[in-house]
Length: 461
Image (cartoon, rainbow, N blue to C red; front, side, top):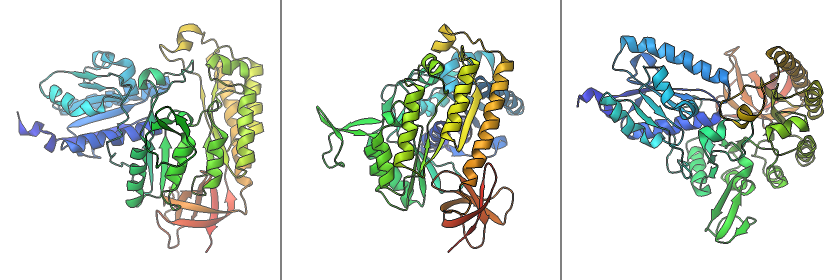
């Protein structure tokens, strides 16, 4: 074999699209590849292998990938020996179609098959195409230490589970990421402790639905309070959260994403007990209408969601709340839309991720429900949602004027090299004069100004 095709001399370039889970997955991929001698490069023009980690959650996410593949095609014309691979959710959904429609694609690998990448690349070296999109009921990559791709060395993601069992009618995630399975808590603790020892100040625990985390353990030395199983103790998310928080009070803990039907008061009380668990919860509502939620198969009503919000505000008065809002789902009426706007106002979200419903192939909604809301109506409703959220975000920031927050510095402000930026416990971005502070410092900042997106302040001793 030509030595130029050995892993030790191959340069890997990886692009990541989509959610934080994909970012964490890319770090696993890099770890797998570096273990076999591949070297990561940030210069696409010197790459021997290009991997694009993809998202399928909405149609426009996939359209971006098709556009990138067209760009890669031009690069491959100049460098025919270049290997191009599509990995992640889009790879799982489209499988062979990616190779059939884009002749430049050599490799297609699903989210549960990253360990096989080096062997698949050997197949590609022989001139063949390679595919592995087998979903697993066990794979969590728990034994792989991810290579951190972040630039600041301050914040990192830890995947605590994979897959999803919720089967929301509009969602493609269970089809491309498989069934839900939780990761051994000891491996999570080990990874978090290692990050803290390396100087990281903040970790985010990731899962499609962190509130359904569940691990049966034989270890009697784990914290008390877990439910007893027939063969050991069952570790739920509240207990995992406490275990990670106890690593050090200097290590901030965040998590994403929560599910309204599963979020328990135990999690909220755990957050209240530990000051290093950040006071922010992302609780996707999707809709404020019980009728729409039922069609979405979300597993809760408007009233249930409001109960969870009231619990958050009672137990964690200083907690900020963000959400996901989808408009234009099947059969959504103007009354349903108004229910969503009213819910947004009632909660007073700090920020929201807002989007129009995009029908995804093979989901329950695509097979059984009509995509019957016109694009014109979807766009108008989305505009109204965005405008309302802008007002709510501004109100949320103005409430913080005059307050003092502990801010973890993440880097230099994009608008001024004389200013730094970071986030407070509530996940709000704070900008302040640089002075002698640096990335990774904790700084107390008094808020003096704000925009709808940012808090602006002055450091205090």
